[in-house]
Length: 168
Image 1 (cartoon, one colour):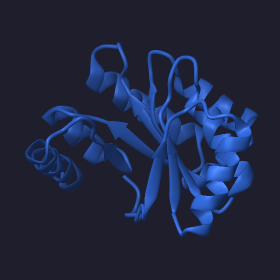
Image 2 (tube, rainbow, N blue to C red; image 1 turned 135 degrees about the vertical axis):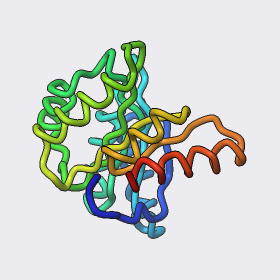
Image 3 (tube, helix red, strand yellow; image 1 turned 90 degrees about the horizontal axis):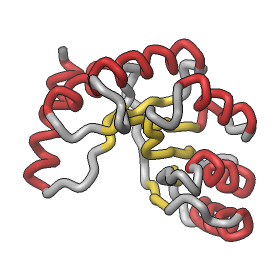
């Protein structure tokens, strides 16, 4: 895990917006003082492509994708897509999840290690997690953990698991 980096105020937008709409939205978010824009990823709407539209209009914003499922995106492909789209790795939060691959812990651990080898140190890697072991793993090896579809009490428990992993 790298040093703590505040995420600031961000906004999540669905992937697949056309370039003009995504660019206009990104420019307006930058004017309003947002720190980051995030996109999901869908099989028909790649999240990294949406981030490229955001970056063209608002290069100062941090950009995050949550999440790239590892059954569709191997680490080498993630890096190749970042290069192809000319995204600034220092501005990125790359969210990954195991997708349908098993065993989840091993898949995620290996992918984070590979991404750390292939990407500059400034690129932040976050792990999608909901259950205790994956939350702890994310806390131990990633720059953050993405929690999804949780009630507040569940999120509070997950936060403790992440903290346990980070502390070690």
